[in-house]
Length: 186
Image 1 (tube, rainbow, N blue to C red):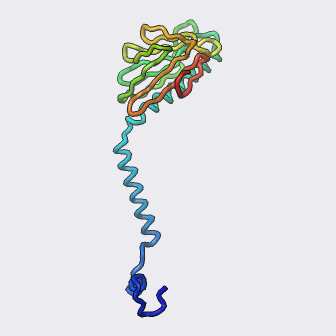
Image 2 (cartoon, rainbow, N blue to C red):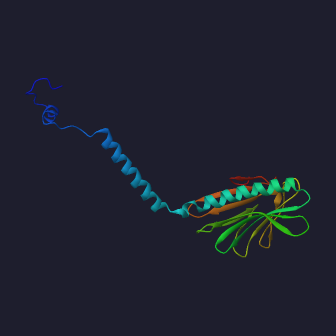
Image 3 (cartoon, rainbow, N blue to C red):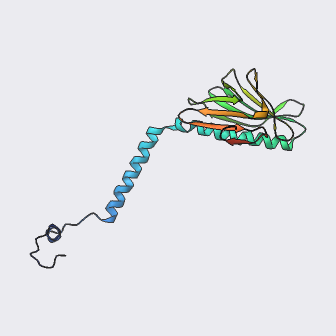
């Protein structure tokens, strides 16, 4: 503390000259500006391609579950989940065929953006492309009934693993019971 007017400490000399530290308002303003700059810089560095595999995998899970629920509710019809490429997008569809021809229950388009999809089934794996689509059929109990990747027949009893890779990697499994979830098929 500076009690004597002739105190020789640096703190007392600064107080005598009227100097003080930063105010709380100045500190908050600087932190706010640094936060805005950091958010702007991160959005430029990361880009939207980093999120593309996550978007594709979340759509696969959501539509896989919709296909299973549709198969349970419409036991009189054939229900399938189809994944293919359509004009630069991954097209993920739930189809229903009640004997009059296939009808689309739900369709989602997700930009490819350097994202690749590899289907694993047992010991085999294949990459999906414009010429190699994935077709997964469900039975009336919502379980997997069939699966084909292009011309390759898949074994529904072991589940169908779907790997989505790009700037990051995600795994989706449609188990033999028909339930779609994030992770590898075991």
